[in-house]
Amino acid sequence: MPMMPMQVQPSRSAIPKVLGVLAIVFSCVGLLGSAIWCFGPLSDLELNRDSDLGAIKTWLLVWMALSLGVFVIELVGGILAVQYKRSGLTALTYYAIAALALIVVDVILTNVLIPSHYQRQGGDDGVWFSVRTMHLVFSFMAAPWPIVALALSRNARARDACNAGAMQQATAVF
Image (tube, rainbow, N blue to C red; front, side, top):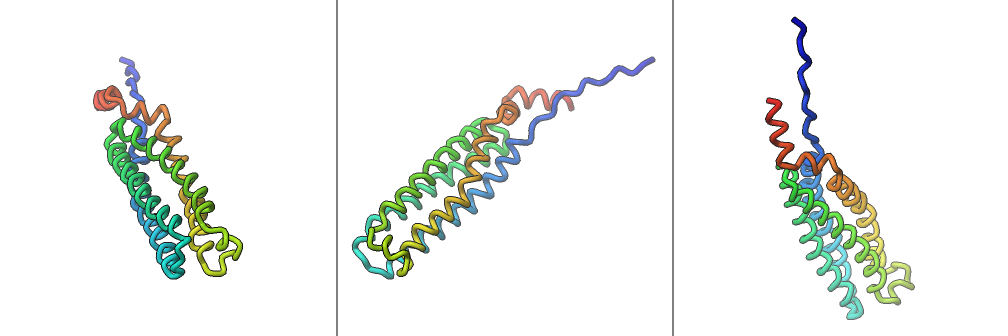
């Protein structure tokens, strides 16, 4: 009697789980980096005791608060994505859009809010380097991950893996 081939159900994509684990790790790393790139320049700015630096000091604190919010969204999205919940992919989509928007706003404001006399000095006193250059470096390092997270969280296979029906299909195989 010939053996009938067994029907193999497509396996559940691991994209949400991998994306979630990476999001959890990168949210912690990102928050640590934001703290360094906020409080480091703030301590450098305090050495100058220049009243013209009030706007950039305020922006650094606002940026840190916004970063905290963005990384909390990423952490929650990562936890939910590891559990194959569609809301995790949605949260990671919102995280990626917010992170990219924050990067753009930060690059613009750190260039605009530094008083012009610090810009002309070319960083001799460290303000230009500590704030502007270091925020550009941080933005350059931070930008690739939200782009990847956005692409993966919008991936059709990742979304299908988080559907309730996908879970039932996967359990039906066993």
